Image 1 (cartoon, helix red, strand yellow):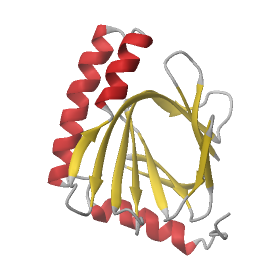
Image 2 (tube, one colour):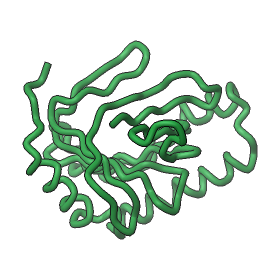
Image 3 (cartoon, one colour):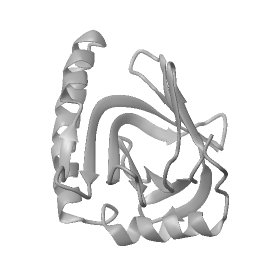
Image 4 (tube, helix red, strand yellow):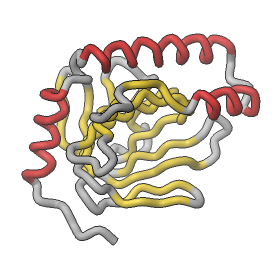
Length: 177
């Protein structure tokens, strides 16, 4: 299965390969084993640690990715987005519009914070984000940061760890390129 992000103007952004793991009350979980690829125009990388991404059931304004053993101590990365959903045309394609703001939780002194505000401001002007979208996503970023700090499900360790365990048990890792 594939996860494909685009920007507000429809241009291509991040895409990645993954495996569908299942669903729970929070939504659908996609796994990316070590060595699997993600790319965007001009940049690509392979997963350095197993990670899972939640496509929320009741919210189309973020995707949650949780890492285990990330070499730079990143545990949670939340992409604020617009229109996060499964494609109507391809049941193995999850899509979203990247909206620049991200909430990140590191397991070191950096802690939890909202990042990429400079990109958010630049693209808000460049792409003329509607005022209601700006207001909603700025409030949502603050709300998500609070939930991550409090480790409220699904932003707690136990929820994602069950899905990471399922991913690891599949044994799909392949060597880093």
